[in-house]
Structure formats: structure tokens, C-alpha cells
Length: 198
Length: 198
Image (cartoon, rainbow over all chains, first blue to last red; front, side):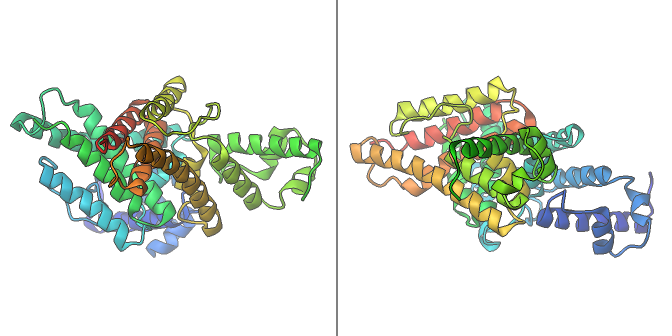
């Protein structure tokens, strides 16, 4: 479907409203009618853009997977040095601190709620997580090529370590409402990567 | 409420059924009627034990928080040595491998689905996670007292590192259906703790 510029803007407004409502209430607690009202659009207009609730949820996931790894941050450059990784980890901790641990990650919430139940949506989540992992992987490869990391550093494992640290830190910081889990998980992940320096 | 032995058994059966259904379908996808049928009990009997769905969910969380840290494992001893921690990490990875990454952790799913929405349930989840963290903390303290860890090792941070590794590994292994995330997160967490050896 090709959308006009105005149509694009409306579609984005619907996705913004859906993302915020899902973060607050979960997928099950969010109806398409709630989204329609929050987006301030009329009648059947929502179905012009998304023909079902599932289509809307999948579009939310796809868009979330494209934003950089820390919500609320401007696009971050390549994570291809220890300084860049440290800045990324600090941004994740600060984000949890600013929001008193309430900073929601839509993908984490969705993975908890839907990960094991709905196969199509789970695949979208997988694609999102794998996209993030490959961003991290690319940065680590640059570091290894440059000689910052040892040639035997397993980049699949190290990029997965960073991703699990981000997700585990987010899940526990959201639930416990403190940034301490994110700080602990990021410190451990970065120290692990540093242990592979030449 | 004091229950007879038979009443206790029925209550356990209801909690077993609810835990399994929630792991499969999430909280929103599980009705008390589904639980009643799966537990094989009649009419209004469920409400004799739990006066609302929320009371049932909270009881599931409280019971899950009391099981040892790896689902499906027999009670594990104190995690108070590197060998014990390695065995614990290996059990977590094997659990994900056996179940092709589908091994559900009810607390992780619930934290994703409810963590940010329902304050009372979130408190139960916090209590569960904090109970686990204190088990890990106790083991690390024994290691520090024995001289296995340096006196300046921050046990709050190290116990939180283990907990975020377990949760991040579980969330991503469940979603991606491979044990690789659990293996990566556990390797990193254990290496971090080893870096505080004397």
C-alpha cells in the first residue's frame, strides 16, 4: 500500500498511540478502539491502515525493532569501540534512572506476554532481536578487525551477552523500579567483553 | 484459611493447572473457567480457594518464587562456591536445551505481561525476584567470608548480575527458541564473578 504524506503521518500517529498503550497496559489490555481514540482518528479509519489487531501489533514490533537500542536516545553511532559501548551502557542505565525504572521496552513486554503463545508475532520479535544482535555483532567485528579484541573472541556469544544484559536489565529494572539491575547487567557484560582484549 | 490435607491437594492441583495455562497462554488468555476445567474440579469449588482471578495469579507468583531458581530441577543446595554456581548455570542451559528454548519461566512471562500495569501483582513479583536475589547473595557472602571473593566484592551487584543473566537468558531463549542466549548470559555472569577472586 502506498500512502500519501498525510497518510504516512496518520499511520505513524496510530503506531505511536498503540506503542504507548501497549507499554502501559499490555497487548491484552489494549483494544483497537482504545488505539483509535488515543490517536484521535475517526470511525473505521484505523482499518484502512491495519486490517486487524494482530497486523497493528506486528507493525508496532517491526517499528520498535528499527529504533536504536536505547529508547528515548537519538540514533547512536556504531558500537565499535569500548568507549562507544560504555556510552551505550551508561545511556541504558540513565534511561532507567530518569524514569525511576519505569522506562518500558515494548519488545521486552511483548516477548514476556506473547513470546510463547503466538507464532507469527514471536517471529517478528525474533527478527527484531536478531536485528539488534547483528548491530552489536558488526561493532564487535570492527573491534576485532582493529585488534581491540582477540582473534578467538566469539562474536556470536559476545553480541548475545550484550543483548541479554540489555533485556534482563530492562525486565528487572521495570519490575523492581530501580536502575540497579541495568547497572549490574551492563557492568558484567562490558567486563566480559573487556576480558577478550589483546 | 486452614485446609484439610485433601483441601491442600486440591489447592495445589488448581495452582499447577493455572501455572501451566499461564505459561502457555499468558494471564490475559487464561480464564478461571479454563483453570477449573484443567484442574478437573466442579462448579464454584475454585472460588472456595481463590476468591478472584487476581488472588489466583498472586498465589501462582508466590508459589513460583519459592521453587528453586531453575524450573524442573530438584531443590538445589546453597550456591556458595564456583562449582555450585557453574552447576547451576549448566542446569539453566540444559533446561533450555531440553525444551528447545521453550522452557517457560512463569515469573519472566508475568513480569513482561503485568510488570508495569498492575501494582499489587508487581509487588508480588518484586518479592519473588528479591527472594531469589537474597538466595544468591547468601551464597556469595559465604564465598567472600571464605576468602574466595575479594573483600571489596559488591555482593548486591554480583547477585543482581546473576539474576539479570538468568532472566535475560530466559526471556531471549524463550523467544528465539535456542539455548544460546542462556549460555552467553551465564558465561558472562560467571566470568564477572570470577574476576573478583582473590
